[in-house]
Image 1 (cartoon, rainbow, N blue to C red):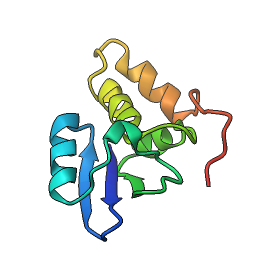
Image 2: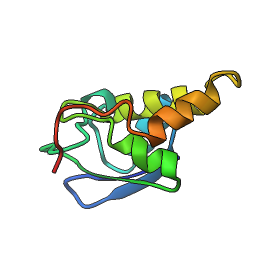
Image 3: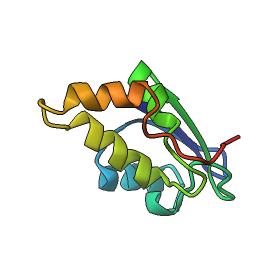
Length: 110
């Protein structure tokens, strides 16, 4: 759904697909020399980590537009998890709302 590439200050990087187990992600980040917690890594303009988000589906790319300036890597993981595990009876409506930008924030990201 959402792909993330995390690059630390020392140049090491890690790539994962969200949603993922947040504890395993943190463990893998530490092994790559990235010591910041996912809940403290801003999706945009983080001073310690370069974060690149991409999507492999229309829903994923639309979902990326939902995140605001203060959202974190942990927030993105939680949202991706919520969408990917939504109950069957609400999934079609949820996907349509995402595709039609029903959940956009008022913040413009650069």
